[in-house]
Amino acid sequence: MRGDTGVAGGMIRTIGIDPGSRYTGYGLMEGDGSQLRHLDNGTIRVPTRFAFPDRLKYIYDELSSVIGRFRPTDMAVEEVFFAKNVQSALRLGQARGAAMLAGVNAGLAMYEYSALQIKQAVVGYGRAGKDQIVQMIRHLCCLREAMDPNAADALAAAICHLNTRSSRARWNDSRPV
Amino acid sequence: MRGDTGVAGGMIRTIGIDPGSRYTGYGLMEGDGSQLRHLDNGTIRVPTRFAFPDRLKYIYDELSSVIGRFRPTDMAVEEVFFAKNVQSALRLGQARGAAMLAGVNAGLAMYEYSALQIKQAVVGYGRAGKDQIVQMIRHLCCLREAMDPNAADALAAAICHLNTRSSRARWNDSRPV
Image 1 (cartoon, each protein chain N blue to C red):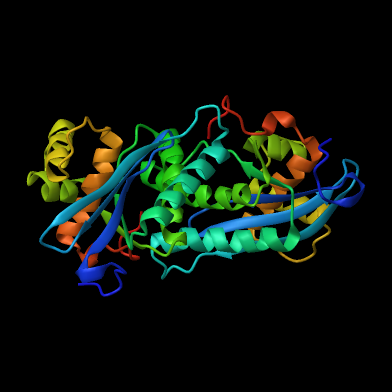
Image 2: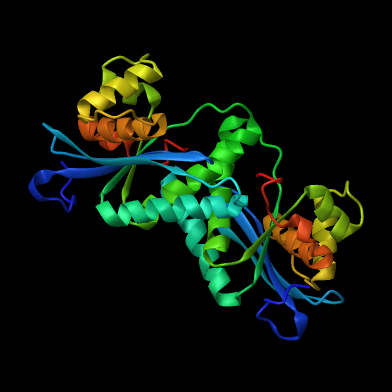
């Protein structure tokens, strides 16, 4: 167990993120290995009138503000292997870079999990569909209201991190993004 | 002509960048439309032992430090349309996002030029090769020493901006990156 949580009682407070150039989901959870508590979730919706560099700044500023408010120690991000084409991969990459930079500039420990790991941790089944993820997240977080899928994916990454808390998921040279 | 240069005599001071996840070139030039002056250039070489999020932070911190030292008002970046595959586009995108964020967080006006525009502005010929660019950059900047190609590409973007200073190159919604 990591000793630098800054949260009482061995609790780890994690922000999960699901970055995108239009919508970036985030979800805050804390847990001590046996129980999980939902703190907050939401979706950063970048105003479409913004020029692209200002969109990156918007994602960075909004996420930095959430991090400042909840002071998580860890950030969990889903690995990306797929994009429609090179152009959308570039766009997604830039948004993902801005979101990750908000975490690393705030001193968070950064973790990355595959979609398979996240689905297995949350639903117990690696091929779970979007709807199953959202339903399970609402159940685990005791949320009654409808959930934005970006925020659900972000919470799923955070829950995966708290459930597995694998040191192997910490970024290192052997796992380039 | 833009009035917010912060540099005496209508001079515009520009940083050109050529972002990459391993090497990020930068080049600083100033000009008033009739003459150009080379200020500095270099290549940020990200230590390969760094985990990926720390690489983004390294690019961001190093570029922020260069911007703090030279206080340019504008940043010029080459458009990217090509990458080997989706994975390298994602990697490049993240590095490019970190580099652009260093500019936009410092309040720089952001401009983007196509490779064709840059080659035409620097060599006068849109199909110029790498070597021709480097030779012309050394000539224009009165540099005798050998040049790193990343730094040369960054200087080329800066020179293109100072030569054309096209308001159309300023990012807007019709030109997503």
